[in-house]
Length: 340
Ligand SMILES: [Fe+2]
Ligand SMILES: [Fe+2]
Image (cartoon, rainbow, N blue to C red; front, side):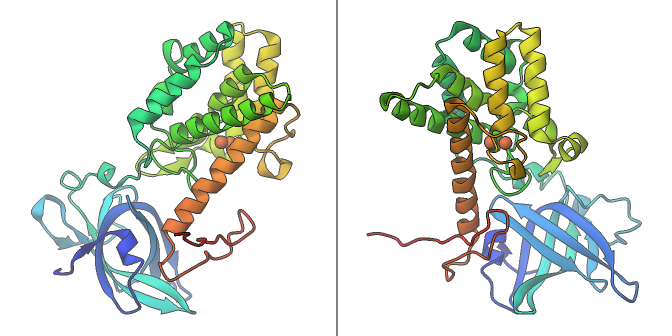
């Protein structure tokens, strides 16, 4: 195995027939059978630079490289759990119906101590100390004592959501799907919402800044129950069956009742949590009906779209101007022109 070790981002720039060696975490592994009943596998491999999907055909070799040894294994009967583990792949770029296809010809189960899966996990690109300080500053900006104390008690002193909140992803795919993504997204939404609210205050729209800030910081707390973090974010059973909007409003109402939060405040904040996706087809049973809810929902939508644009454009080959059509946001995305 003398091939140069590449990152996933580098592999994705290779032409047809190029060979590669790459390491990462197997974020998904699915066993399938072809029409002759021969097994093949589809593996998604992730490192800090991106994700790649590859085919592992029946002719590929599976090799255990733990503890300095190297011997072939049968993936169905070796007792090794490839999914969620650190894997090395020796492969070749192929082509299928005009699209590049990555053939994973040798699959190495790496020594997990020398190559810990945590080393391949994607993290928020924004400095974590900056995000943590910003989060605390945003709570400090809440001047209404009961709301301020409620936020402190939920995130820190009493219920301590913070321990999970600071590392949690904001999604499993699409946007902020990495360690620290929920904190990055929540801080960004809260700062964006605050600045929009300031603007409309000066344009004489009555906006309650305390509700905007608290609503923005709380809007996605349901994600603490809808995802798990192992090496890559995954949906929980509750996440699949109830979703973060229902889970978040339920969590919030429990905290609000236990803390005896004033009924009107609790109603205004619950409305933000429930309506923040802005459209029924995006999972909100009601649409934003107050200035505070409209502002948080708009800031949330923009933050999602900009993060999605960034992720998609970073993964685009340098020759391409546009992404493929992205059904989730019903458009292709454009790199834009560089204005000098
Ligand atoms: Fe959300
Ligand atoms: Fe959100």
